[in-house]
Image 1 (cartoon, rainbow, N blue to C red):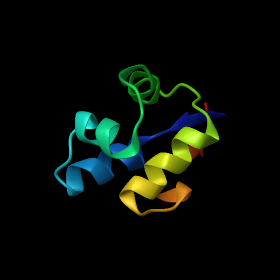
Image 2 (cartoon, one colour):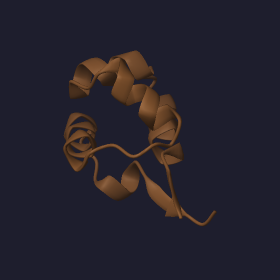
Image 3 (spheres, rainbow, N blue to C red):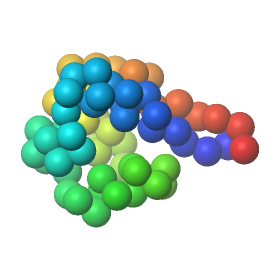
Length: 67
């Protein structure tokens, strides 16, 4: 089972935001954003900051998918 952040990328497009904008809004590093881009694991703290910055819940930005 892998993590998919496609919902997050779609949300950014819908809100006309770039990844760089999200870095600033959520206070996450470029390295962390790169991990998200590649579907790697990040901490729940990072996911929480992103949810708070975008005013969404966790299931609005990620999901688990079968390999």
